[in-house]
Image (cartoon, rainbow over all chains, first blue to last red; front, side, top):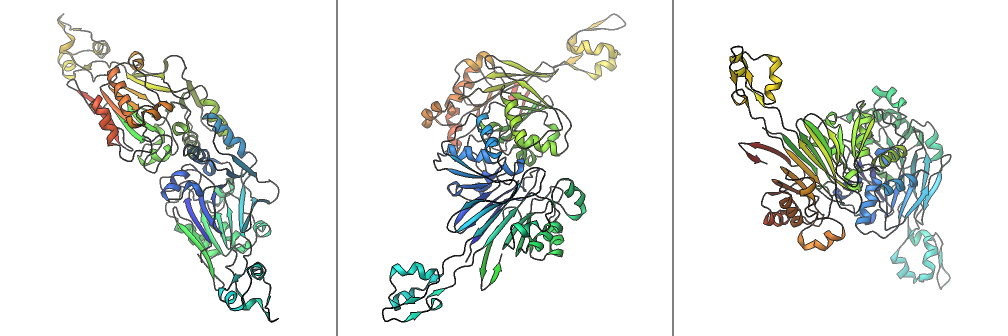
Amino acid sequence: MTNLQLTILGSGSAVPLPRRSPTSQFLTLSGRHFLLDCGEGTQTKLRQHKIGFGRINHIFISHLHGDHFFGLVPLLTTLHLLDRQKEMHLYGPPELEQAVQSLLDSTGSRLRFPLIYHVAQPKAPTLVYEDEALWVKAIPLEHGMPCWGYHFQEKPRPRKMRKEAIDRLGIPVAEIRQIKQGAAFTDLAGTTHANETLTDDPAPALSYAYCTDTAPLGPYLKEHIGPVDLLYHEATFTETHRDRAQQTTHCTARQAAEGAQTMGAQKLLLGHFSIRYDDLAPLEEEARAVYPPSYLAREDQVFELSRKDGKLYL
Amino acid sequence: MTNLQLTILGSGSAVPLPRRSPTSQFLTLSGRHFLLDCGEGTQTKLRQHKIGFGRINHIFISHLHGDHFFGLVPLLTTLHLLDRQKEMHLYGPPELEQAVQSLLDSTGSRLRFPLIYHVAQPKAPTLVYEDEALWVKAIPLEHGMPCWGYHFQEKPRPRKMRKEAIDRLGIPVAEIRQIKQGAAFTDLAGTTHANETLTDDPAPALSYAYCTDTAPLGPYLKEHIGPVDLLYHEATFTETHRDRAQQTTHCTARQAAEGAQTMGAQKLLLGHFSIRYDDLAPLEEEARAVYPPSYLAREDQVFELSRKDGKLYL
């Protein structure tokens, strides 16, 4: 069963190319949809992937460098023109509201739907989203300007009730909720049935961490995020340009892999590639030399993550 | 000889589609290059057309609706990252500087090249650019917000000196400039040679008017621009949606054609198409019924305009 689906709408870094758009990802987890960053042209990439705009209700912005948010106001303006009424939730830096509002003011636009801002705090992880199925925390990273990663964590699901047991034992509807939480069931004859005979294990909870842009963080990601199932980590450069990575507070593919290993991420996706690399294979090789379950997050790829019989599949 | 080349980088209107980008055109006239409007994704379209960023030194913005300028700051930011040093000239509304500066401020960017603003005046045509070969005037249009068309006019060229005449009559270099202006030449023997025997007609001066977005303007374009060789005029709707055109201060294809006919434009290009039209042929038909030399300015088309033996070719 697929619980997590991730579409790479843009794999590039600061300078866009025709086949390497600036950063944006569309994440589906527990049936919820999240847009992560919104570089220039994201609305067109969403259309190319036939992702309906009605599914865009929560947009997370890592930071205010243009390649991560220049597509946001254009997308909001289009939604307005398409007569959207539903509120839009925006997650990001405290300065996001001002940035969005001044650009809307410049164009003389007043959106016909409300924008609701959820502000990430600069000093410590902030719980910015929570519902019955999952939560999202904003994790401060280290970049030239305030910048956050986002940690998506599914909550444990209720156990799966066996329909056969309901029929066989005549379990009343009123008791099912408790049984799904792990309770045993005592029938009218006074016999107690252990929960394991009534239910099956639920699909395991999955977790995803989105970390771009950042300098290497050492044990920080382990302390503040922990061993996620899937980590997306920027890998702007190869080790050949390690100095350049340091100057621009970015990472090499090797540093991204070291980060994934240290935090105990099950799988690693690499992205935010510099325009200097036509061939991306060396970035993947460099990461795999340190941490084998590393993969390129290439433009337009769709990743599906699932766990079955205790094993994780990407 | 081609004097004018026009590349349609975007043919769409407010809502972009994967194959219909927001407005932008790249114009070459008298060997000068001009970018007209800069909707979201223009930098990527320039790359697709292999138009080097070094040729972008003059950008004209019609108005501050997003589909005409959301790509401007992203383009400027990319030029900065690519280490541009050369100044950039921006032409447009008085509010353009504030709009550009606040977005740059949001991203924490300070460009390493100067921006030089040339402000269009709201009440009357403004000469915003002039050099020895051509001039450009900003012409106020009628739209929901202050908006300008741009009128590009080549100046008459000097006459073409016949090399054969220079050799035959031993014309000194010092006299050539005057002869190119139409003067006769008197040789050492005292014989005067009429200018027509020394020179040929130069390539005729061409003119282009870029008019988007606007409500129908009646005789206004004739009064303020006059009979240009090529007119680009918005044609957002067909007559079927004439009411919608009126509500949104746009034009139908028929109204664009009437405008072209009234002003005496030699050729008409139609653009800024609403997303409601998959098939654009009806817009062209509608315009041609009024004014036959009307053409669709389709996405990615390159138009060349030349005059030969008194005839204009597109």
